[in-house]
Image (cartoon, rainbow, N blue to C red; front, side, top):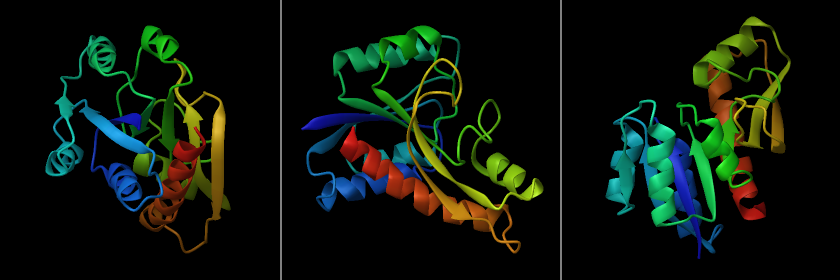
Length: 185
């Protein structure tokens, strides 16, 4: 089995989709060896219910080192950032280079970087009257949202869309390309 470690900060929507994809056979050669969070969040409670090993860490200057120590005790095949809002330091990103992927709710390089996550992205897309949005899977590097793009998929932005309706469209795409990226990894 190829072990995945998932880093989370929020609801765990993509974590749930990965778990379902493992159980329904779509990701039959994968297992989740741990979920690591940078705060108390719904995703870790979901992982607990599914009997997945969790680590809830304090967000501080040593966060990357603490995550690294956990990973070294059970080295994963890959690391998935799924709504993980903390920055990983340069040393960590270099050490785990090409093993870490991130799900981002825009068509990078547009709407990437510091502060560009979740509804912040969707509000910006609507405000700028974009006709197309979507999601991106990319490698994680020391530069926020600038790693090599692995997969992107777009959707049309309707003049009737608002940040909430757009987030629902993009969420569907995120799940699809995340599972495809894991399979292709």
